Image (cartoon, rainbow, N blue to C red):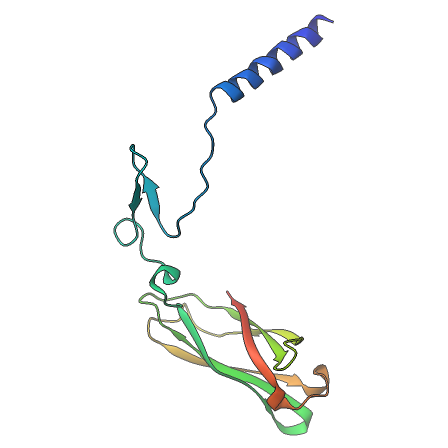
Length: 155
């Protein structure tokens, strides 16, 4: 009985401390890098303390272009394109996850991964071409000009 009372007393004291001395959390309403000063004013730290992020500058670090699906010999299909590093720093790039999408219905027809063989990282301003061959039977019976290639993400 005594241990139960001790446990109850300890839990009650912890609860009182948590409620009494707690501070409400403030959700981050502003994008980017910032802090609040002692007066509660927002101080923008983008560019001074925090490097400008690609989202803040409106610039996507990697630009994918010439994404296409083309027929090759023997009933095979090639997914190809190129990627350019528009950042001012090298970006490690190992693979690209892509999807083949029906242009009209926006239905995802196929998802795949393209491993990239870039030693080290994709240097600033550099571009690299990539290609992946698939069996045509992996795709639904659709004309290739009705299928678009979209980059889902890259690592």
